[in-house]
Image (cartoon, rainbow, N blue to C red):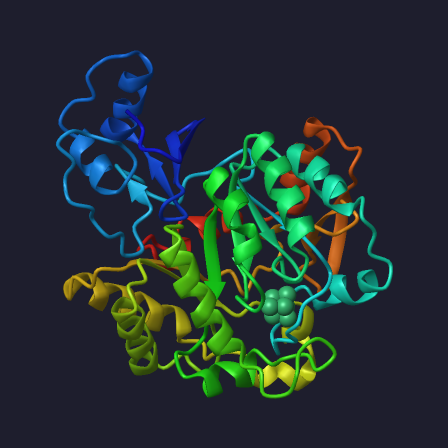
Length: 383
Ligand code: SF4
């Protein structure tokens, strides 16, 4: 049978499978997709089932040892990244407030104007919009979801009730404890941002906002504390690191990787900084990594596979195509980043599912949307 927390969607190429314990999508074709078809018919799954169990898609008895994925998202034969008709992920604002002011914040342009006018009905508006987006996963983000736990709780419950797998995307700056019951009940994966294990290095990019936090607060130390708390509570966790000119050096990334393994982290996602929001400002141009960042990340992933590092690794490199991500703002409007900069509103809370799908196909770069969640930037297809 499917492992707990796995969501499957039929596609023209076979199936998409989202594994919530890893916060990871796999695309399955051929015999691998046939295993899921056989399961649906109540038939025995056959020999390929073992590798699906190793990746956490199936629950077999006896269970094979888990196999880390090193940038792997495609199981079966694919000559290019598969195409999808509907979104994989929708990001949902919990609040426009955030105790940090990261130098590369992609959402700053949405957060600033919404802060003074935030109202209590917003989480339900956001959830209503997200329910019309036929994405498998809803990411609760912001702003900082830990800053207003009651809003985050409402959002998680409503997104879950709408059938989404839910991810909590947090800087780790804030209290996780009030949310632990709702995170457990809804099998939420917790993704925590950390760019360096050295709090000083981390905090140079992930700067505190003095309007929210006292001087001397460390974003890096808070992230490590929240990471430990989530792991101790038995929640599945990921560390996400933004790759900028400050940390793109492979030896630095390897040191971070090894430190995460020592801390017991099982999932790591690396995002090449997207020149949107604050990262698009001229004063932050220096954060953009070199043109060689993608080959360097591909090499890091390859070395990790060869060294059998016990860590699941995913890479997103959609920095040249910002319009690859869907985001519901705090008033329940659906946005996509414009290629020319700034956010474009593509639907509102009253939109039907069909209207949302049409807007998704018209405004989102579908190839890069898939690439973002299926490790497309480091796949060895001809480009
Ligand atoms: S944690 Fe940083 S990137 Fe995230 S919303 Fe706050 S300022 Fe922006």
